[in-house]
Length: 271
Image 1 (tube, one colour):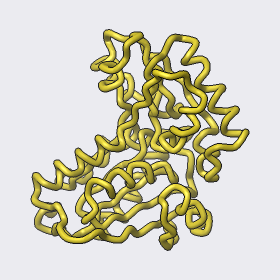
Image 2 (cartoon, one colour):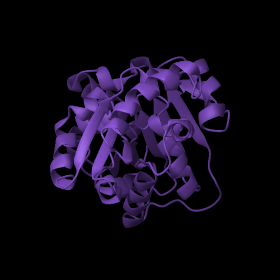
Image 3 (cartoon, helix red, strand yellow):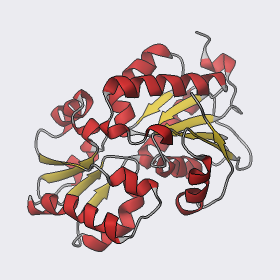
């Protein structure tokens, strides 16, 4: 494989993907930290949610999308999806050893350091919570705290509609959060990139003093480090973002003004 530094210059785009719109929370952190970067974003909405899919299926989707972005000349790849990271990060790193890759994982280490009660709650997909990668994170960073996990089936699908405050999502989220509070959790890990969009709603329903932790900003900083190491940081004015979706482009186009705060055009991705 050609060295990425040689084949992809600093002006090449950074590619980001997720099963749906959740990765936009990560994309926003990247845009804020690295405004000169040209960004590509793909929502694999034709197969959302990943959290209830088999690991083998997720690996195949990730390989397909990575191949597409590599062919597009992307200089780095960001897996803006905890479930995709758990299933496919190792496979992608083996397939593309010279391509800078940044992956997501639940923020167990900072949550374990932040908790005062010694009890940390995790909101995540079933796929993330059942993964060997998540179990390894707990073994490595959470030996001195109690971790209570809460799978959240159905939550991603509601966020995908753009309804972040309605009665349906409020009821569902309360049902997932209350058991964690009952266990004494004072720190909640938002273990899916969709969930940061629910921070305003969570703040309304949580008592004061509950910490919400996600990893979007940390991912952006890691991307900056990797690009700087390879002298691939872009310079100059803010760049545009190109969007693709494997679902209905009109659906993503309608939700972008809410979650991305702009109305960029969306291309169809069929693979």
